[in-house]
Length: 161
Image (cartoon, rainbow, N blue to C red; front, side, top):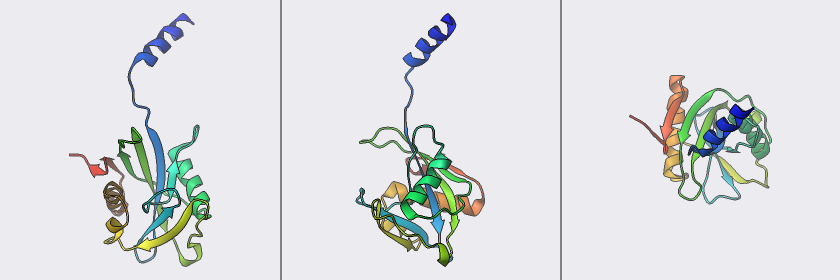
């Protein structure tokens, strides 16, 4: 028992990151356009998703957030992007983007008015006009990862060397 106390004291004295963790889904329509949502609490468009709650995995959070924001429960696929994206006003952040697949006309989302005041499928060439630069790079990387069939690791929305 004493060993555990010594170990705990050593571990808690070591500086380590305590990032906020968020997860979202990249959805496309049959024409290859990206689904963007406009959250009521943000001044920019985003992909569906949100913060991971205690005891929840990023994958579980992604599924929950999609259901809460869009009132749909499509199958969520594999990981496309992990982005180490600290924000000056929010501290360390770790962001996960999962493959939401293609939404058919029957599964077009119905936005939750409490969280989302609009949604739109946006041509990939116009995404950068609607979202912050780092998110635009993250979406581009997710689209590339989806085509390649392998996930990408980013820092600040960009690939590392």
